[in-house]
Each structure stands twice: as C-alpha cells, then as structure tokens.
Length: 156
Image 1 (cartoon, rainbow, N blue to C red):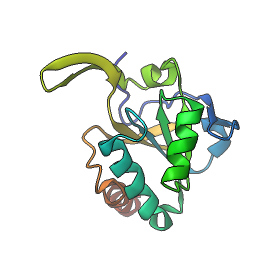
Image 2 (image 1 turned 90 degrees about the vertical axis):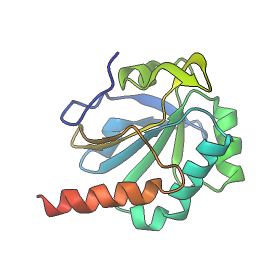
Image 3 (image 1 turned 90 degrees about the horizontal axis):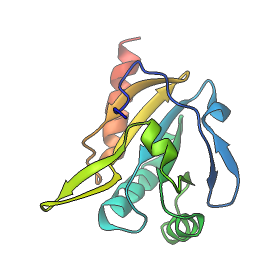
Image 4 (image 1 turned 180 degrees about the horizontal axis):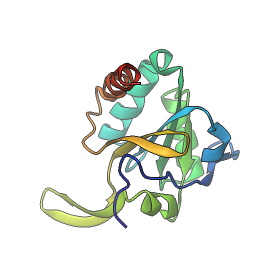
C-alpha cells in the first residue's frame, strides 16, 4: 500500500497500549494527533526519537502524541517505563495499521533488504493527514513538529 499523504483521510485504528487500554484515533476528535511509527523499542534511533519527544513534551502539550510499532505490549511497557515516556505506545503486532498508513515495506539497511516499519510521523487533524515526516531527525524530531505547527498556524 502507498504511504498516505497530506489531504488523505487518516485510517481509524483501535490498538492497545502497554497498560492494556484500547486507544482509538476517533478518541481524539477535535485534537491534533502526532502519530509516529517506529521500527523497534529500545534501539538507538527509536530511543533517541522517543526521548526527544519526551524531553520536549511540555512544548507539545497541545498535541496528542502516540507511537506505534509491532513490538509486544510487554516490550512497550518496559521501554516506556525505562525512559519515563509520557505518551502512549500502541502495539500493532501484525502490522495491520502500519500497512494502512503505508509505512510497512521493504527497507534497505547497509545493503541488506528486509521488510519492516519505515520511521514516519503523521500529523492528523479532523481525521485528515495534515503533514507527513518521511525523513525523521530522531534527535530533533520535536522541533521538526513544532516548526510545521508554527507554519500551519501562520497559514490559517
């Protein structure tokens, strides 16, 4: 499936977080959602991204931040507790939602090809994709999001 782009309808989802609570995109109607897909808990890039979002969470307070990967609930729980993440990590064990958003596919790392999640972030508002980050700077991602949000506020 092709990756979603700005203007596309955001597929709804119903996924569990590490506490076992079901989280739906529709729960956040009227709010801006930062939905970030990442490959694997507790790996260097994914940890840097999650910690960057955590460290800048007060600046992102007007947004709902949700992370999705195919890791287990237990893995998410351990990762979230280890790094004191203040946002929900949702698990998509079979990659159903990852595929609907077009972020699961062939990757090429160091000449090795395999299937997996492509690190991607979507900003969603009123059920529509407003912005897509395909090239995420894991150590500065919160600022990337804030810059786009400032631009979008200026253009309204």
